[in-house]
Image 1: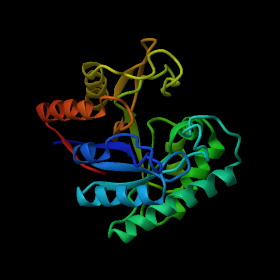
Image 2 (image 1 turned 30 degrees about the vertical axis):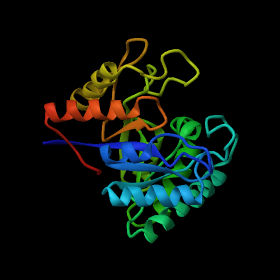
Image 3 (image 1 turned 135 degrees about the vertical axis):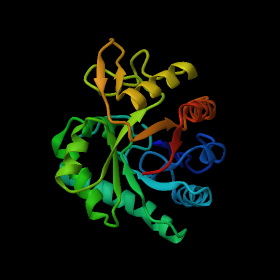
Image 4 (image 1 turned 90 degrees about the horizontal axis):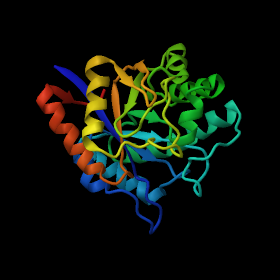
Length: 251
């Protein structure tokens, strides 16, 4: 039976401000990327999100970002490779501590937002992220954009990398995600999302916005918890997977 991981960005509330419905979506996924406090999240939110994941048997991952609370980690910043390494170890270490306190290991690292997009094409940042993931120890995996430089860097450093594809984002012809500010960046129709996902999972390819077919390695599928209708998307995907004999399981 074909297996697939369904991951979701979680714990992105901050103080009294709430984002997403983590309690409703957690039972529908197999791994959670927990915000580390630099683009969203705070210590209490990290603790509660990790506890919720552990209670539902969901793998706990860290979701490090640029230090950009005001911009939700979606603005470009100029940082060195060493700064990137430090940011990833620092943020992932916070989530790992809460996971350990809850009796679970840190399962993976998945970079957030603009840093994810930049590191997909920047060899220095990709290398720093792979080194940081390796140095966290414990066999922590790296979730990285399929076909990106992060995947290559992880291989060089002996880090297990899982190719990530997206259920609710469109792609460019070079295999990168369409920037959020461009028309069509977000897929808002459930049927269109399911069709894209099945093509990626079953055929190993996707069709970009400009009609180019791009090969992908679909090891983990991301659904954004902050997108309106995220729960409906997750439910529709699970129905489609059941019909196709695709089992959901964290790697």
